[in-house]
Amino acid sequence: MPEVIRSFIAFDIEDAYVLQNITKMQKILAETGADLKFVEPQNIHIT
Image (tube, rainbow, N blue to C red):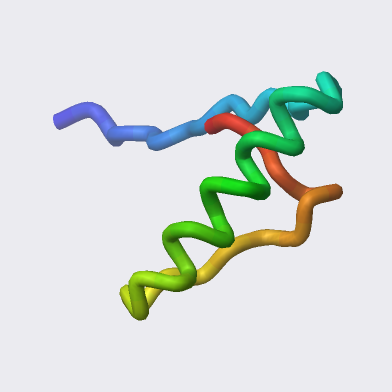
């Protein structure tokens, strides 16, 4: 049976407007009290 390889490709988000809106969404989600972990804005990426 062939070995399965899991891989991911990540893209940095450099657009300031997009980063600003993601940061706003993080703050809103954090206020819900959900058990979530967020990365620092400089580490935000899409996987």
